[in-house]
Length: 122
Image (cartoon, rainbow, N blue to C red; front, side, top):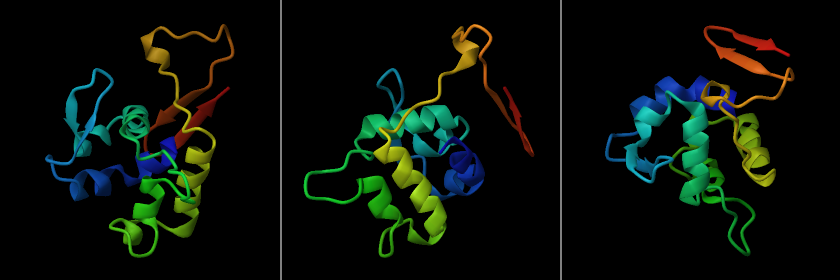
């Protein structure tokens, strides 16, 4: 999910106006287009927003429904990308711990450098 947001960040930031907002970690309304710069914050905000909650009697959460044919984001996502989002939501919409805030896994770090190419370090 993190890499999907990274890949969509330029188009997503352009497509969402500053009036489209999500709540940041402090509960402050933040323009959604600005959140694309920080995929972890975007994932957390989407989870807090209820867009990742599957309502009783529904097959998909509102976020996925918006990506399906007929939804406002349908043309922006491939079937495989929708499946990535669906799996992320069905696995509980897990968040990525921010190592820069002092979190430590005592030598078991996994770092992702999101530049032109991904670099994974185990």
